[in-house]
Length: 168
Image 1: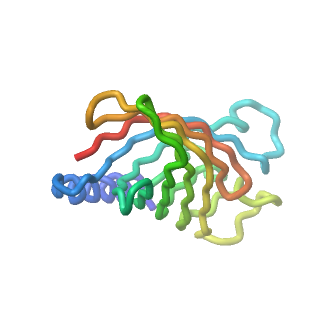
Image 2: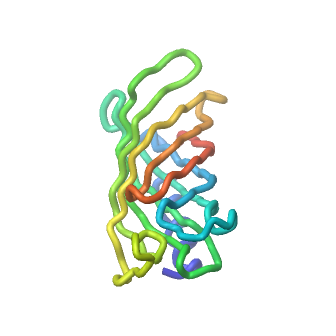
Image 3: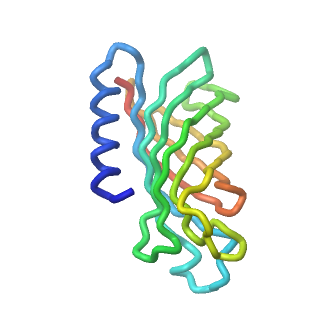
């Protein structure tokens, strides 16, 4: 999927979801770093890569949120570039006045960069994506929150992300 198509898809989805503002839709943008357990190079530029994601989600029942996430590991090297989308599930484990602790799960599809495979030889154009992790969500204003999260992705990568969510 080209960058132009991804931007168009993200913009269209955000516009559609945000236009239904009375329904408690959250829009979150995050950035962070990701590292792979599969890489054979010890060079820092091969070990630590950028990650960006945009997620829309809604509270399905008290403490349970469902949504859709679009993510990318933007990299000029074709063996590292990943673009994909997934359905997400967020479960509230604990809440207090100054924040929330959540467990995160996601599953979807994306392109298949070589770095996802142990032998570094992606034989397929597409692959299943899965993630699991935890996040700390801290309210900043009445409808804006800050997020810090750590995730395991496809059991071959670990990411550390932070970002902001707005409720519409």
